[in-house]
Amino acid sequence: MASPLQIQALAPFDSVLIIRAKVFGDSRGFFLESFNAKTFHDATGLAPHFVQDNHSRSARGVLRGIHYQLPPHAQGKLVRVVTGSVFDVAVDLRRSSPTFGKWAGHTLKPDSGEMLWIPPGFGHGFLVLEDNTDFLYKTTDFYAPTAEASVAWNDPAIGIQWPKVPGCEAFLLSEKDRTAPPLAQARVFEAGI
Image (cartoon, rainbow, N blue to C red; front, side, top):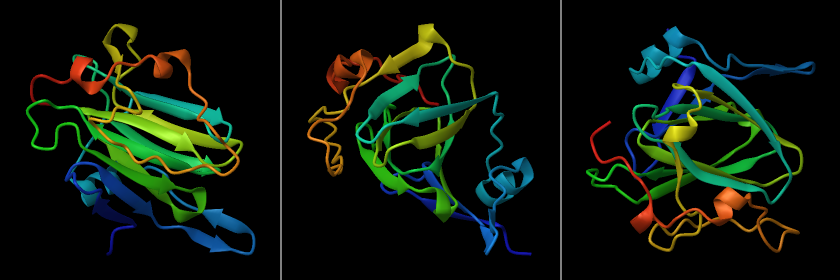
């Protein structure tokens, strides 16, 4: 039987994955299985143990990130949008990786059935493209303030190409995101994950 999930690596990374769940729709609406541990393992070879679910709602033009947690509380994240849309970004922060400091982005919308798997060792951020966007993510470790870290969303050393958001002259940022350090000064993953 064919897997209900389609998997695609998000270049230039092998381990950041676009996961497309099968969407069953008709005139009444749609249904999709947003997570099933066996199906996820069969399709990806991964068996993450999720311990926390998070839900954020944001206005158009809000930019959150680039956030991550360092060991011993590094987090993998399975992220998806249930209303609205986002441009979602992963940044490789593993110093020993050949793709250290590289980024990849993908637009997530609710009707596509798409999710992103962002493994430990990567920073994560997203730009909200529509008002009242609801963003859900499962994490493999609990929020740990002592392990929390961030890197500047606009660091030219990383060079993320954020899309323009119609009607927004400037992104809406938290104080933490406005003052995040550049990659050269950020705490990163020194050992393999």
